[in-house]
Length: 96
Image (cartoon, rainbow, N blue to C red; front, side, top):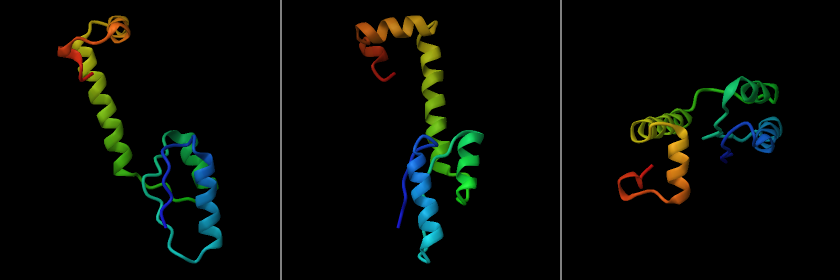
């Protein structure tokens, strides 16, 4: 059985996972439970969920950081990016 969630906002997922771990003798695999920040980790630990680093989370965060770097190279500031985004990106920036 897999329980899939994205981050600490999915508190219900954490509670479901904890309930299954407490009541079931089956192996429960918690994959891609992306718990970011100390608050989310503390919530999970309080519910009895092991919070081991998930490579999926690290990869998602790295991808996000890479997009920010691309934006920094293409636009002089956030305001110019927002203006371009509102009126539609030209072909050279369509991937951002």
